[in-house]
Amino acid sequence: MKKRIIVSSLVFFTVLFSILWYFLFSIPNDFPSGSIILIEKGLSLSATAEKLEKEGIIKSIFGFKIIAKILNKSRIIKSGEYLFKDPVSILGVISRLTQGSFGFGTIRVFVPEGFANDDIAGLFGSFKNFDKKEFLAKAKEFEGYLFPDTYLFLPSADADQIIREMKDNFLKKAGKVDRDIVIIASLIEKEVPKTEDRGLVSGVFWKRLEIGMPLQVDAVFPYITGINNVTLDDYKIKSPYNTYLNKGLPPGPVSNPGLNAILSALNPKESPYLFYLSGKDGKTHFAKTYEDHLANREKYLK
Figure 1: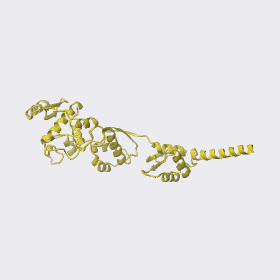
Figure 2 (figure 1 turned 45 degrees about the vertical axis):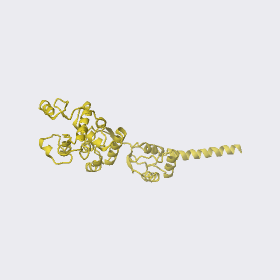
Figure 3 (figure 1 turned 180 degrees about the vertical axis):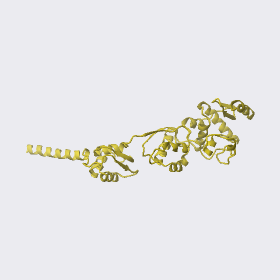
Figure 4 (figure 1 turned 90 degrees about the vertical axis):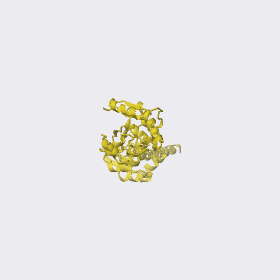
């Protein structure tokens, strides 16, 4: 009797081990090495398992679902394109899908502070799923909120993924910021290269707004015209972004500012100054009166 129980136990555990081995580690004989599988956003666990089984990545839909649930991984599958260069077990597939291990090398993209959306679009020309027109249309309402930073994107990244990543990074680094602050920050970012002068220029901007004086910021013109050089004719351009012809803030940000510019907009420095200019010497020169400002122009711009 005892011997029969031992034999039965051995048979049971052998069968159990075989089942576990089949589900956890066995690989389809005709595994499609080198295939790329797209897991769409919002795809259910069952639908994911069915797709993987249809593509030959896994042997068992049931096994995939059970193991994912046992490991508590069923709700954290990450969408995207996955390259299965070499055969992998169900356990390995689940691990990759829940870690977002796509199998592609990421591309490093550096977005400088002060880049407008059109500038950012130019950085992604080599991405196969990136469409510039689509990006600019979708990113238009988020101008100013695409945080400048260094990013790692998959080669398959599209406009939605890029915008989402940069927006999320803005919230992570800067938090929730009022739109007026972002507009001021975008002007500071383009107008004042020396970070130590930004607080004072911010104070000048807010003072001008308070007294109803036009902001008179040259940095808006490259945004309006798409040309970096500013000419005397630009000051006459009829545009809501022309801060010489219009009082108050422009309708929106003219660039995507970095954290320093945002903090400067949030924390303006009080001063007696109402005028400033960026001289050819690379410094910012301030003046209390228009007469002093004209003198600075003669001295530092000619």
